[in-house]
Length: 347
Ligand code: SF4
Image (cartoon, rainbow, N blue to C red; front, side, top):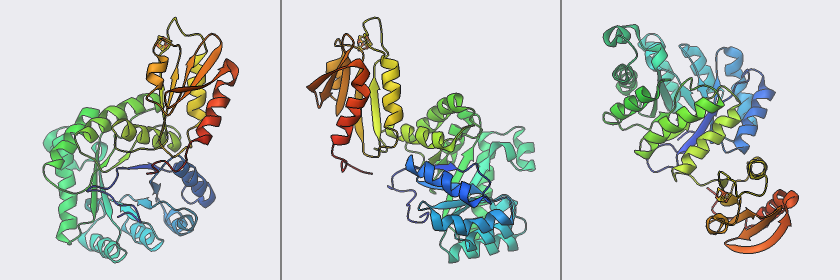
């Protein structure tokens, strides 16, 4: 459990992101967490590079309702402080903390507060001897590193573990998770690290995470993008929705347009997508350019529009309900969405 959110087993696969504010800037961090939560973020991670950041956690926790994970590198004292401040989980690698006494102190406190620890192996920071053995950051090397960290915690009888094996190389990441999945039964946090900008990072993450999730590997995901954390959440949820692993929000079915299209469909589809991005209940909206395929496809959707000559024909569950001028299509569709039952299958 991360706070009230279950991870692993048959629990729904969760979406995480990480704030990019200074954690010590309490108000900015709270604002960002609330913002990503609106877009469906289940778990938030914050960087804890110093004492101010560790201390800020107690204030942030009071103002947000999703579980908060403290991300700590090397410094066991910051880990202790973050737990005392109310963090719901830690991301720290026990092999990097220092001697076993320090690890023991962190584990003891984590046990007392019943919080899990994520071991986050990153291809870019493998141990020196592992790098020497494998020559470059291989999947096997990442797995060996993870097992090292895992064994340290297991020796201290600590099993509330979650593991990530991130590389910026998609195939290495996939291989590493698959190798480790054969060896341990702990929940996995999936991610492709340093995946790039919104465009390239989305593709890399969809391919890497999607491939693992389709094989039943992965319990919680974070899409890393050089961009707004809000986009990470949106992409993460979309990956889960595409795979049928979560139901949430609007799914737009829209045609690619062709010479038969008589309305500005690209603009309309994008406008509908933007204006419905905060809707939580699952709903399918079809946006089709013409009557050739439009009505057939729109039939499957909760709501749909097909373009005519400067007009939009609006469908609800396959039945035509109105014809409106092109300029009113978006407003009329939004009106109909509001009329739908908002209690539909909330997840
Ligand atoms: Fe072309 Fe109509 Fe198909 Fe859209 S729905 S791609 S406009 S034929």
